[in-house]
Length: 339
Ligand SMILES: Cc1cc2nc3c(=O)[nH]c(=O)nc-3n(C[C@H](O)[C@H](O)[C@H](O)COP(=O)(O)O)c2cc1C
Image 1 (cartoon, rainbow, N blue to C red):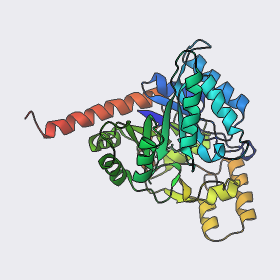
Image 2: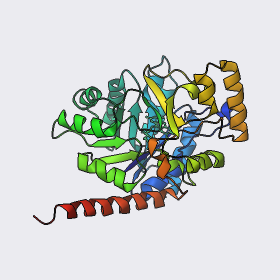
Image 3: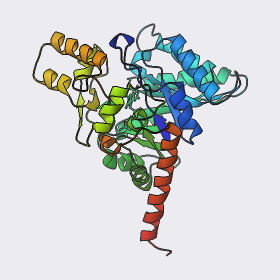
Image 4: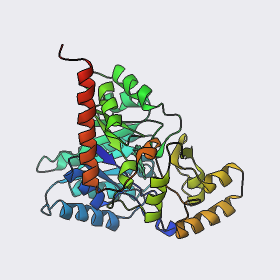
């Protein structure tokens, strides 16, 4: 089980914190999953602090590898003189167990960057490379060209940013499997998963594991505000929408073409859809963020949000999911009996 949830997607000036830092990533790992935090828009000192927090929560020595991962937005790495490259080096130097790349036109370059770094390491530390993709063609490229260690198939159901034309997981996962070599890297499924039954269904489709983002926003360790968590608890399964309204309101429209984000539908989206001037949308959005107003603020959420009814420790979430998965798989196995 993997949890990736990030958010360097918020800027400090918007007074909305990110979602996954060292505390959440470490808690997921100590629960038996694998936690990721995001490098996103934050600076080097913030990333250092978060990695130290994870190290300390996991009671690791200062030079021990850290069994969590760090996620990067590849389009940020691809900018000329990108500060994100320093953040990538920093995580590699800190000996994190994995890095995650998504949303770029040259992911292969960053896989090579990691391999070169590991090639120079004196103790043979290997950093696993995860690539998140949304089409069968990209999965093939990730496997045969970029040679990643783990492929993450992100479906249209996903919370946060993703490809607006991504197929649903029920179509995407079997298609990738049908077009991949049998000895390829593990395939994880991401998008709209909130219950162990969801994960069990994807395991029976042939995925090797699952990635949950939104579910981990509802933990004490997540950096989401109390108002954002309350909005998630109140949301039904039809409460989300894919949109660029929040990126327009925040001034974060640099995403590659075709990418938008799934969030809770509210007045910010309605105004944006209705052609209200961007200045007014922005002003009301920032005001709403300050006040924690669910009608205006940004709450990323996947389609599984309707089943999320409680805030629980991240470790407890992983354990609960594990138990539900085993129950569902056992019940399914009973359908075919002993033969
Ligand atoms: C708050 C939030 C922030 C996210 N940020 C990123 C990101 O920076 N990079 C990325 O590759 N995916 C990001 N995602 C998407 C996740 O990688 C994953 O695909 C998604 O959370 C799975 O869907 P779910 O949220 O319905 O579980 C984010 C998701 C959420 C909910």
